[in-house]
Length: 482
Image (cartoon, rainbow, N blue to C red; front, side, top):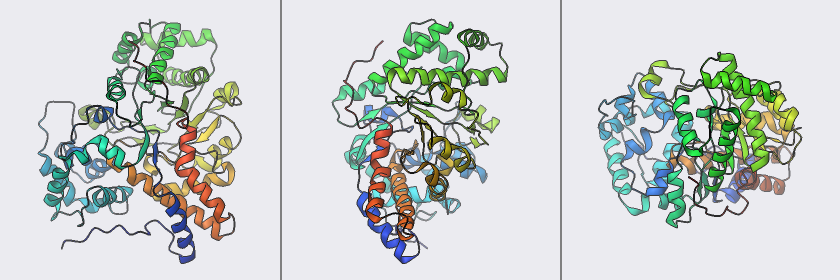
């Protein structure tokens, strides 16, 4: 049986009629606001080349670890889903991969992936029947036909989605050539980069040695000396700022920071680059580098994001065969009060520094993160992230942080995605959930409705724009340094 695909206008709103009516009014005032996407992992080459996307499988399935991790958990091999591996193995036919996905679409019932994908299918592609084994070929053909038109090229979709600013994420060993091509093209879309130094900060990263070589070549510095290494970071950060960056991003296993003396830091660095370090020393070096990055942020103005708490690449076999970011990153307990104290002791009271802290450990929201952000001027709370980028995760975030940190020590919403077409869907979900939360406060007489309208606007648009310094004039379009 073929079912119609229907997006209910009241999805994610409260069931109780009086609260739902308030949520509707609030959402109506923010649903069509421009999208601020200040942190994500879309590919800048899409916007540089503006080439057509290939097909449904390569656009929507193969890059999306939310999808293939669920399928893999049910015994579906990744190579049958066109997930690229490290070796030369032949990839599955895209139509067959899509059919396999469609026949297993029931696995995503109750997950945010269904909300996002159904929004994409209905709103972006205009499909009117639900995805199933019976409709798989219809989907593949309709999506493929539309992807071959100019209206579905990356830049046209960027404009259609009303994206005001979108940030990608690159490492110091990235050439930034695609960002330079975007800026030289004359296209008005604002696609900027963010500085993610993990490959040259994490000595346990499998690409550390090769990344350090590229780091040296881009900067002309002796990156194996402590002072040369720090200078190289400053040089690369300046290159990223020339490419539009307003933030740095740090995906460490923990939130640990350190404040070593110059002598201690240099001695530790020599053990790191010499390869004679222990796991504890690798962790100490990452901790010291968060403090060094905070110091650099005070110099150059980049907003600092800390994304700790993921045991990355937990599945050793998948990591060996397919590489990083293949759905096997698992949340783990993360402590913040003591971990952040060395950095906060040094810089926590300086209003010129801005540090946005994320977590995958929801138990820390009300116990640690909200009280910290509700006190220190430098701290802001990032939104519910990754596994918690979901209706229930967003509700828990608001419920556990608002009473202590308020709304204005948070930074609104960012979508943190590789799946470009899901960006408007994710922002739609976030705006609906926030409006539902605010509607409850209004009907409980804890917030006036006019105040709720202001907060809804701030959460959807003003706060992310301000937090990531996107409300400032775009920097001059300078040629990237060699």
